Length: 33
Image: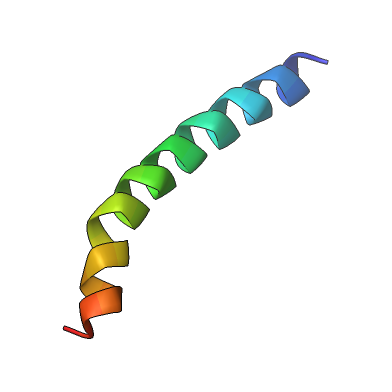
């Protein structure tokens, strides 16, 4: 069970990082740069 909790925490952090990357890159992709 401990392994699953750690994986969930890592996934949460990964998704948080991905969200930050998306905020940065989404406008760039929209502008086609």
